Amino acid sequence: MADNAWNCGAFNKMFDTGNNPFVKMMSEMNMPFSESMKQMAAQSLESSEKWASRAFEMNEKATEWAKDTPFASIFETQRSFARQIFDSSTALTRQLWQLEPKAEEAATESSN
Image (cartoon, rainbow, N blue to C red):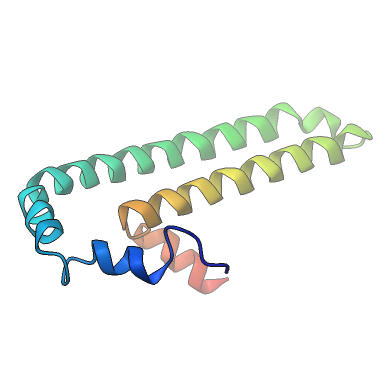
């Protein structure tokens, strides 16, 4: 991956909590606030995942009529594309908030 402004060594050195006492102090002061925000993000993400999976199921049921028509591949592609976008955005959110995936998700991913 190409270096950018956020991935260069100078940026990492400047905002590394071990090297910058100001950043360390600010992160320690905001620790209680950030933990509650992290919990809120985790709950919101879990709720969104449940609603999205229900929406994908409803979409699949709503388009069952097209099973033997030329529209079937269009609907399946649309559903697959939406699922990929949703999975990518939840993965990015988990990475940004440093959240661990739910235990049952980890178990299903490891069995595949």
